[in-house]
Length: 151
Image 1 (cartoon, rainbow, N blue to C red):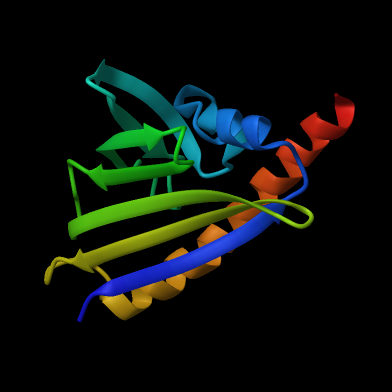
Image 2 (image 1 turned 90 degrees about the horizontal axis):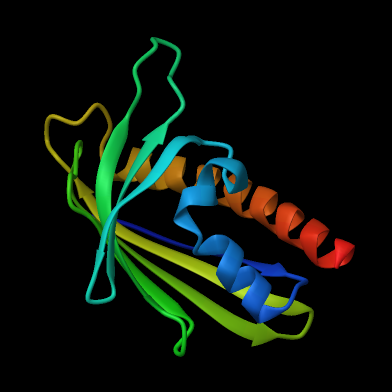
């Protein structure tokens, strides 16, 4: 079995603002509530290598990883994959931005497989990601709409 999530939200803001705010990796510590660190390690040939780390969990452990991201502003898509996969065998992400009535539909698709020794299986991680993604998308929507409203 493998894991798959497909979530979206409509943000009432201009495309360029949604794109710019959600693709400014180093500001993700302010945009997302889960990240304590977001650092670009390198940019080369359109590929951005970056490190993310969550805030410490209840035991004080900080979970982090390195990913590579390839934004396509003209096509309004982003492809990303974890380079340091941690408990995942692999984790691939696809972000898509579409103009729809009411704003910009921001869609995130995640495909992954957990390692056998991971603390949770694919089904449990799918549930966790679906819950967390919806929460983070709502927070991001509110922040971007607030900036759009302020002009």
